[in-house]
Structure formats: structure tokens, C-alpha cells
Amino acid sequence: MNLWKLEWLRLVRTKRIIALVGVFVFFGFLGPLTARYMEQILENFGGGVQIIVPEPIAADGITAYVGNAAQIGLLVAVGVAAGALAFDAKPQMGIFLRTRVEHVREIFTPRLVTMTCAVIGAFVLGSVAALYESIVLMGSLPIGGWALGTLLGSLYLAFVVALVAAVSAKANSVLVTVMTSVGLLLALPILGIAPDIAEWLPSHLVGAIDGLVRDGSLSDYTRSIGATVVLISGALWLAVHWAEQREL
Amino acid sequence: MIVTTGLSKDYGGTLALDSVDLNVSRGSVYGLVGPNGAGKTTLLGVLSGLRQATAGSVSIITTNIGVLPDTPLFDQWLTAREVVDLALFMSAGVHDDIRVAEMLEQAGIEDAADRAVGGFSRGMLQRLGLAASLVAGPDLVLLDEPCSALDPLGRREVLDLIARLRGDATVVFSSHILADVQEVCDTVGILRRGKLIFEGPLQNLLVGKAQPRYLVRVRPPTGDVVARLKSTDWIEEVVVVDPELIRVTGASLDVMETNLVPALAAAGAHVVSLAPEAPSLEDVFLEVVS
Image (cartoon, rainbow over all chains, first blue to last red; front, top):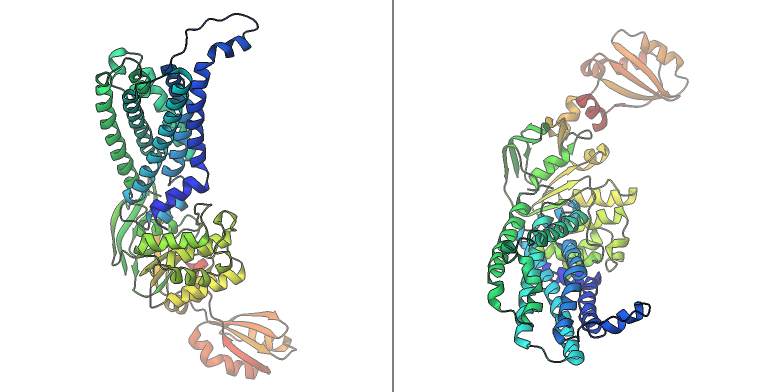
């Protein structure tokens, strides 16, 4: 047993990996389906009222996936990451780990890398599902734009996990870590109401996959990419620094 | 093994440790006792590097330290064997199935080795924590109330395990159970309100506090004997403990040693046994901290 295997077992034995992959893949399949049959769905619930919606295109399937992934998927990702990264939430567990390593980063690294890979992996699987079903139901999509968009969405999720890591180093419980992280992540789109700020925010990357399968280009996201990389670095530095300073 | 100088820890105006000068010899079993809130857990936390001292210095001549909190907790989905294996790998960087099995057996949880620890009782968690603390063969073991959740059999086994460490490892353990400390420790430190008010060999503490008191077992009836002893001027107190046992307190140990036997003979006592009443650590502890 080592700290890397410990994190893999945490995902498997607690079934968190199923929750994570399940949510993203579920919305990966559900998104294009609802986009394709939106008109019929609305008619069924419309009480006989005729509703006219534009003819769906494949990009609408990706839009629907991103919408769900950015909300419910994000909540699950934050919960799973917090469960692993808030290792001091129960001080007795923190004592077991901390008294056996020279630096706290030895504990942090396997947790951070494993959770980041798991969250990104689930997002990518969901994105593949959305791509496949969008093409099957609604026609072709620019694969290059989809791949780049998925990459940028993954960068945003890496930022999410890094943020959770920083918050967990200060918070006293998993619940506080989740609530604080979600609060901060919700605050970003609010800041983004100002157009000049929006393109600098990590949350701008959430819609990258949607934009890039339509008429967007990488240059629309370069400021956000730069800011996100800087913020990830800062969050990780804070996470390790605060965890090293923490007393149990 | 451990030397602290002027060690203080201030929690925002509350002084949990106040200029503690601790000296723990290599290979000793050091008992840290004190009332609730005396600073025992804080001191162990500072020694284990989990808390930072506000002032003073700590010198420990090893980095191979095993630490056991009073209520150990582990990821509930791990088995006991995996916990000890992880502890060994994190501390020593090796996997050794035989060593892990040996520690599980010594801790008395070999039958539960492959069960998830989520179903363990507090006593079993304490045994598991002890196994995890000792598996890497630490030079220094810091134990916070290691017997607090154990049944009498478990307590006996853990005390034996601690006693066997003597000479191979240095053990510092805090306990409220003074009989445990008296049984396995060779050195005692008494903390009160963050101050180390006594430190030294257990015998020094007990001998230094020995009372001029004897327990005398006599054949009944004891009435006349008690009355004649009470009338003796250098005897301060005679207490009938039970129909055959009386406790005699004198002016000093020296007077008691030379005069008690003649006084008993003069009182016509049929003496069955006679022994000085050794003070318990509990008696001394209560006297020192009061």
C-alpha cells in the first residue's frame, strides 16, 4: 500500500469514481438527446400549445452537455475532490498521515493528481459521449474544435480541483470545503458580468468546447488560459503553504 | 533522546505550556501525567511536530518517531492489514508482509486483519493505531492515552507491549490511569496548568513522598492493641482498616523503624505481618497537584 494506491482505492471502494463518471457520461448522452428532441419534449409538456424551435444542429448537443456538466457535474467533482483533499478534516487521520512524511506535499501530490485525473477523465468521457451522440443524431461536428474545447474545459476542472485543495487546507470539514469552493466558483461568473473581466476568468473556459464547435477560435480564450494557469499555480502554492502551517 | 528548553505554547492568551524543560533519556519509558487541561496533548503535539511552540526549543535526536493519538481514526474502507502496511511504507519506504502480520498479532487484532476498519470498536482502533505506530520500529514512540478505550485484557496486553519496548525504543506516554504509569514507567513528568512541576525517576518521586506509615496484620481481637498504641506519644494515628489490619502512622520513618516493633510487643499484639505502606503514584500525584 502506498499513497497513490490509497487514492485509487478511495475512488473505487467508496464508489466515487462511479458517481463521477456516471454523472458526466449520463449528461454526455442526455444532452444531445434533449437537444435533438427538444421540440417533441416541449410539445408533450406544452398542453397542446404548438412550440416552434429552430432545427437542432450537432453543436446544440455539446451545448446541452456543457450546461449540465458545468452545474451538477461540477458539484459532484467538488464533493469528490474535497473528500480526498480535506485530509485534516478529521485531525486523527491527519495525524496518521502527517507524522509519517517529511513534507505535507507528499500527502497532497497523490491526492491532487489522482483527483484531477479522475475529474478530467470523467469530463472527457462525458464529452466523448456527447460528441458521439450529437454526430449520430444531428450530423457532423468539427473534431479539432471539440478536442481543443475539451482540453480547455479540462484546464478549468484542474483549476477547480486546485481551488478545492487550497480551501481544504484552511477549512475544518469536508462540508465547509465544499460550500466555500462552490461559493467561490459561483462568484466567478458573477464577476464575469463585466465583459472586460469575463475573458480573464477561468469560468470563461467552461463554454470553450461549445464556442469552439461553433465559430469560436482559440484566441477567444488565450487570456483566460493564461489567468487560469496562474491561478492554478497560486492555488497549489497556497494549498501546500497553508497545509504546512496548519496545526493539529 | 528529547530535550526541551523553556518550551511554551500560547493559544491566543491561554498558556497551554509554560516554560517546560523536559528531559527524556534514550531507552526510557516516560509517563506524562496531569489533570485535564494540564497540557499533555499539547506537549505531545509539539514533540511530534504537529504543533509549533510559541517559545523555547525542542531537540529530538531521531526522526524515526511513531505517534498514536488518543482516538486513532483511519479511512473506513481500508482493512487493518492495509493500514499497517501503509504506515510501514510511509515511515520506512518498504513493504514487509511478515512484519505487518507480526505487528497485527502483537496488537491482538490478527483475527480482524482483513476486515474493513469502519466496523472496528474504539478499543480495536486503539490497538490498530498502536500496531501502525510501532510497525516501522521507531526510535521514539509518543502515545497519547494508549489504554483509554481498552478493556482490562487489552490494557494488560498494551502495557506488556510498551514494557517490552524499554531499551529498544524511547516511549513517552500520557495517561490518566496512574496505575499504568506506575507499572511501566521508569520516569515520570507531572504537568499542571502547562508547567512541569516534577520530573524524575518514579522511585525518587515515591520515596521522596513516602509517609511514616505501616500496615500491621494482627490476630484479633485488636481493641487492646489499638488502645495501647494510641497512648504511645510518638504514634500520631492508628486506624483499624479491618478486624485484622491496622494502619499506624508515626512521627517519622526513623522513629517508626526503631520503635514500632517494641511498641507492638509491649501492646501484646500477635503480629502476623508488618510492612511499610508504600505510597501509590495516585497518592503522590494528588498531593503534588493539589
